[in-house]
Image (cartoon, rainbow, N blue to C red; front, side, top):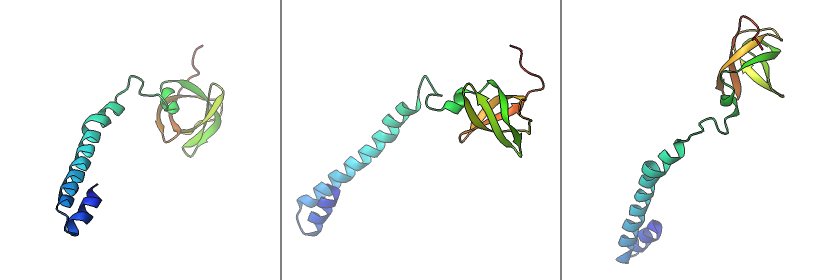
Length: 116
């Protein structure tokens, strides 16, 4: 609408400037609605880890299946193997998931095997 109004206004049609002003007002209104009304509604949730599988594992104690060397290795969670970042650990040792970083689980070493 704004583009058509600009073309009409340049060609001498007086209604073109009204179309240009209306189009710009609608554009500004749309941007304001997006930032003030729609955006906060999409950021609030009662399930913050939904569709973020790696975040759901924070706090779990898991075994290392591929030694963590040079800061990277692999851990097993249920029937899945996940890439992990953390201190160097041998395969078979246990670590605790403390965070996530772009698809990697961030782990810290445990001193002893978990009970149970």
